[in-house]
Image (cartoon, rainbow, N blue to C red; front, side, top):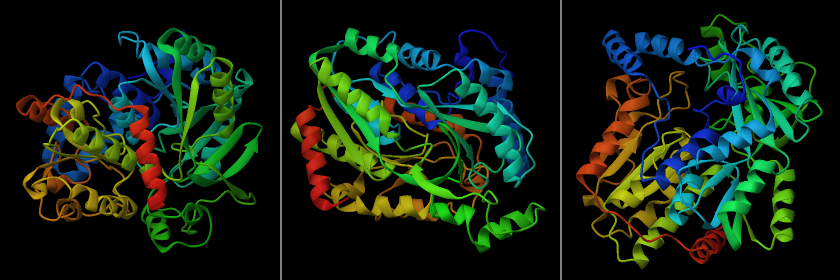
Length: 470
């Protein structure tokens, strides 16, 4: 499904990236609806159902072909503009009725989507992404970086208020990098479209909440406002991707026919820690939003977290307190991973949301930290845990086994939605089936929550987590 250059350049935005999914899911939830992340056609869905009959390998190849077709023409790089990105973001809220007491701006993640839904307010992202068609050989990091540098230079030439991170993840995106070259964009200033949206929709004296995720990652400086990142969030340390000889990385390289060197570092270059491309916040926007709030008599609140899973835990706590204050008994737990998010389910069916950024041991450890909060629920083990599994078609060594998730709730029933255990973690049906199954469950178990959280409640939970040193 090739996307041809035109105006405006909205078609170059990856709708499946975490930034876009966070905004799209919030906009849908404000309508009481569920976001369809992939928007697969009925033909694609039928094709995916059929290929699963051939087993996991056949399914992975089919998904690779479909998702690779989502790549856009490199000519789009000349047309990307901050104005177009911001205009697309606010267009998501065209049919949502304001004005609001607050708005959220900054780093995207599933926890932020649930916070916005708890407050009943929109979210505007700092981040955007494009997946350009590419042809770099697998495990050739220099070829990928050279190709990405040309794309990034075209984008940066006309956008002085934007930074670009060329993101190369030969582990988690292994099945895609030979087809696609990814650019992540980060706003360095508050776009005029965002400012106009705030003026028109935020009540006088309202609150601007800035999400400041300080998750770091080693990156290479390529040029002004241009960086290159290798790898991404998971159980491995960022330095494992670019330094030394990690045995599992060497085995992966050898299996694909590459000369195993143990890492994917750029030769002769030095990496330094900076904001991670997908989850981290670049500081200039924080300062600009704070100044904008002061100049326009808005309240300004900065929510600071060292890791994206902090915001997932904060959202869980906010919803737990909101339900308790309104005498709402949770009907169960909604367990989400990465871009498998459905914030609409919580206010529609009284499901406590747990969002985790990945399917690795680090995320499982975060989940275990929440166990004591979950056990405060009455009849905790009698309530279902609806699990939205994140498909992983690279089948990385970081993905934890199926049984780990099924046993993670001390005997509570875990209901996997949209994924076949035999195909885990690479069941393509989960791309669309998880949403359909969750919508069906919510329709059969309605428990609407009309109340929304106050800013005071959110700040109380922020202080509580600070005391816990989360």
